[in-house]
Image (cartoon, rainbow, N blue to C red; front, side, top):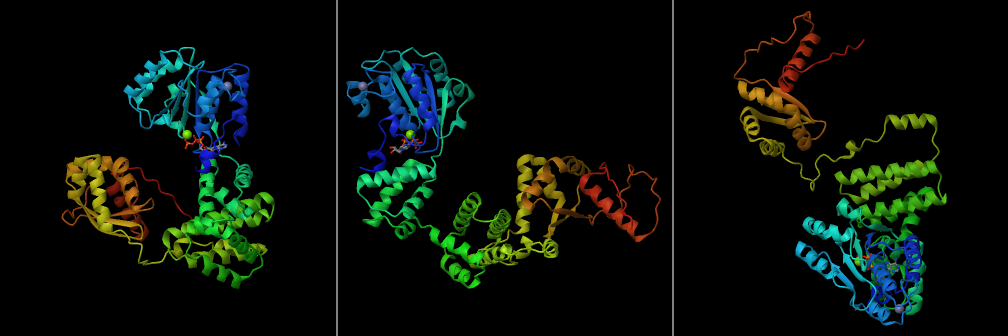
Length: 495
Ligand SMILES: Nc1ncnc2c1ncn2[C@@H]1O[C@H](COP(=O)(O)OP(=O)(O)OP(=O)(O)O)[C@@H](O)[C@H]1O
Ligand SMILES: [Mg+2]
Ligand SMILES: [Zn+2]
């Protein structure tokens, strides 16, 4: 039998890491202050179903409701064997329809056969359809006095507010690593399996707060290690980086030992780099809380790591990214003079400059294709507008964030483009070509005659300085793109 089932708690005292919930439920049982509907939500494998079953037994026990059921009466025995006739478990994932709920409601009309209550445990309750939820509402609000509902879900946000307001809600949290660790130690002692503390710690970390996941990994480790559970084997089994290496990295950084770092990089460059960065961050977090490193250093390290994360998007060379990151960290441990700091700021590392120009495995999208996508997307929003855009706007180029096109719309289309440019077209351009894209429209060759601009006030004195010519050009381009009623504010720069 797998560990998770073998060690499923049968009593409240055996549930770990959910003290507040256990306390509230045991008090409610002992003081007989019971609600008629409960919702247990939270992380997978953190005790929701287990608690629901123990709570049901506590209600049904002959001596109950009591927080310490006798374990010997027929009710307790049947509940422990999961075959109590008045504890009905339903999996909402496979019974999600209104008919299923109607059947359940039918059930609530008959009194319990053996126990004091008729208890419905509805697992994965967020899977019910809306109609099913609605059908349940009335019974949930005012069930017969012998009926109790316990609903469980990993995703309470998917429940309608009408349901949430009719239940007592208990949130099952992630269980702290130290709590799971000592629990696993007890399990292994009972199982007579030897282990290394570090190996166990790694398993617990990988389970991310779920007891079930930790027990499942433990099962796997027992099989994999074939005897004593050792760190090296667990590292191998999980395919993660050995935590020992992470501490070696930091030691080498602090000691400015670049040779050692190069050695380590060779060793770890084939790991998934994202998870290497995750491990490094976890280590840093630890260092932050344990005061292992000065705050300023930790802060610098975090900045360097987040730069590296950016870099991963553009560069697939792990060795390069790791080297850059570690060597920058080495620099970051050195005390900085103010002058250096200023110089550093001035030459602040610009991620863009690391983007390799032609990376073979990152195919740059063809801008003409992007332009076609743009047309398609405009058509999706408004077919006529898309058609007008397609027929009157011709793609020229897209370089250095500048999108050049030639636009020759007829008057009707022109009006339409003006009206919908800002609300429809521009957002789509941003979505497809990026936020910083500049649009450079070219004049239409067929209509060389300059359009008279009646709205343009004639108050501006025209001088023939090249600067003014230039700004006139810019203004006319802006008007072409944004429409002639656009307001343009000039800011004068003193020179
Ligand atoms: N708080 C806990 N204390 C002790 N064991 C636990 C706890 N939570 C989970 N377990 C172990 O994990 C197994 C699964 O737990 P349970 O079925 O209660 O999880 P769950 O929260 O209902 O998960 P899911 O959301 O996946 O249904 C149990 O059999 C038990 O071995
Ligand atoms: Mg469950
Ligand atoms: Zn009993």
